[in-house]
Length: 165
Image (spheres, one colour):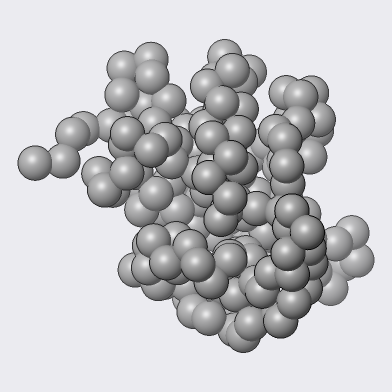
């Protein structure tokens, strides 16, 4: 039976737990090219305020999602890139699905037509949850970057809004 949780906007009150979950995902090795979570100030400055959420079980953050602007060119005004991370103890409870739903709702309300992300192909759980959330695979960027000295591929996924056309 899945435990209950509430999805709510992310605030600085969540900073410590959000960054701890981010660092844990980094440490697992298949979530990002990053090697260390940023400071809260850098994290906060780089994410769009209206498009970041946490899943809470009481006061405990189970996971988070946040979007960044892809480009400052007006042609890309409706395109954002996102990251979603779930605490290892909260996986399999629908947390990522709930967070992606909240992100899709907020972006559509803001007139954003595309949410995109790059996912390591080894991160099959993330690819599966994104597929269930309406994302499609666009393609694979082969050997796009080095991660701990190893060339890594990235699968590009996107969710196009059916509301914002």
